[in-house]
Image (tube, rainbow over all chains, first blue to last red; front, top):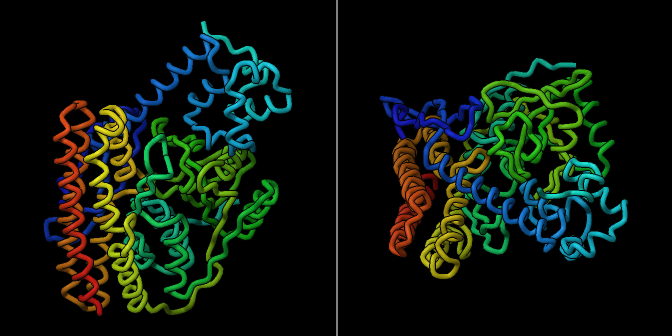
Length: 134
Length: 332
């Protein structure tokens, strides 16, 4: 990549003025560094992931509303986690976490366990327990 | 408390932390040198490990390995500590800062509040330097940022004890001994040999063979998983390729910069030619990313586009195989 080819596309996702450092060759063929404001293929890839997450959150919302899954699922998606990450944050096995996805099991969970989830999601126990989708 | 630490921005976090910490300790070493000697160029495909619901592809070795190899090859001593107790982790860092020792940390990205929201995923192999502390904040030199920044005490605790794959467990590292003179020449040769060995490894998931395996998988993705998932996998692959902290295309350019620097130190003109060849391969990686992004942007449904992309990846694998065989001969 030549220095004058260093992409300066708008990182359209972000208003944050973050610039990345890249290595490129100057007019004499020697390596130097340059700052890049963003690159379109990368921005598209990233927005694809963001869309994917928004979709997962929307699906979880509907499922919680229909009482198919517990609010834990919604907050897990909202926090961009999967079961593996969540189970390691709350310090439980994946099968235990999966069990807590069931609304019936969730309703009977002790405060002690709810606190682990609430702490992980940065919310209060009440917010987790009484989570309602309007 | 604040040590007189100088922040230099870098392309990749681990190289940057290593380079910045060593510069602070009087050893002037560039980011590409760290990357090359530490054999940072790598490729591994881990289909059984899912990251963001897609198979993991890593363009770099395990976190920490670059700096460790560099240290071994230059005869430096680095102290590394992990903690089971958060309190002890805080104490260790604070003691260091009190003694004016800027310290490298492995952290999770999700709670790095100074990152734009879209970058904040549960990715635990990021590196930064803490060089000071105030009543409320820690002073942070994150090598991928243009300038220094801060995190509150609680924020830093969270990122140090992020959970999930490669959980940092409060990991702290800093050089404790640097020899007066270092033998760059032998270190460079060892670094290059290691990279050639990795990229040409006779293992199906590593190096050029790993790329070929991924190429074969890409052809199957749309029929096996449906177009939606296939596009998601492809987008993830490009993200891991070009995102901060990992990097496939960008890594080729850092490596090319390293080879150029190495050609001067080893007085080997051929390495300069190899540097130019690596630059061309880096451009091919960028073309690959452009092509892949077209696929998931247009949500094309033709199975053909996946074949085109797979062919592109195969072409890169062939070029890299020739390249690393030649590079190995150049230095032996």
